[in-house]
Image 1 (cartoon, one colour):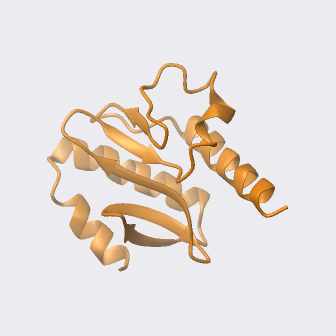
Image 2 (cartoon, helix red, strand yellow; image 1 turned 45 degrees about the vertical axis):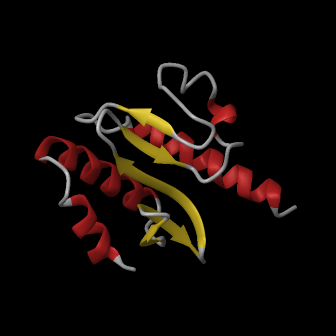
Length: 119
């Protein structure tokens, strides 16, 4: 499961949503240059040494980020206050990628969570 499968997955979306998802993909890739892109649980995911760091996907009414841990989003309660969330996902508009600064904070929080887990 490689980058080509992620590209094929994104082609299934309407142009505006695909553009937003591709922007998210590029932002994550820039932040995690050593990560591998795979499809995990049916969604595009960036992994490092087999550990899922961040996934993303599109849906009928929103796009989502998946930090693969319910303990990441509480760390960013203030920053994520304007976004609908579930225990394991952060929802954002179909035609707008999540702001770069917020994405960086989500990735930083994920690495902090992983560091604590490996103590």
